[in-house]
View (cartoon, rainbow, N blue to C red):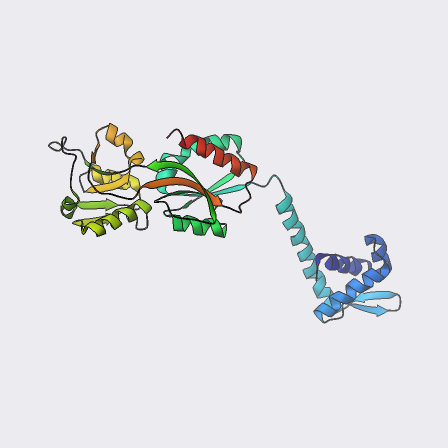
Length: 296
């Protein structure tokens, strides 16, 4: 069963004449007869009663008439939706919270000046594995991957920046000059951490496990801003990308701690599937992002 057969059937059901149907649709009458016969054989019912030169709809034909019209209407709606250039385009972006809050707003601002019609959807991407899965499934168009480098054969990646990770604590009277601490001191500290699965938290936990160090307590937060506020309140120390605490460090609201811990380098890459069709607006977004990351 195809749309052409349904259109022929509906026309014949209105004209009640294969001859007039053929004239209206521009087919030979034998083609109309063949299409109707093929439809009847597929459905296993008789759609028209042939009474000499006249035809009438059977009960089965009347029931099909209602559904055939719905299917043709849906087909028309689908074509309009697909071909309608005025329909809003959608750009699905994946990134960690730190990128979304501290770097992407200025990029999106410039992008939307050029492409105000494009709707933007964000999805959280904490690791390379999550980004790879979402890009391969088509649930993301592009992803900002902040992680230690890992091979991703199906993805095209462009290096944007190396992230600097720092330990931070509250700046209080009496500790202004103290900025060096050993990993062993973490056994006496409360660690305020991002959600489990976050790439730089993973790297921290790997290093602590290798060193056999266990913090006194570990508290997990869903928000980087919540972590910073709690650190400033003296509730513990944290391990975050430096970009998210630069203002607080400059304003002496937080203090950077130095340690000998050797965490794997963390990079931010922009990535998309190797077979992804780059629409003009997607290619423009990539170009804008790469130019802005040179300035960070």
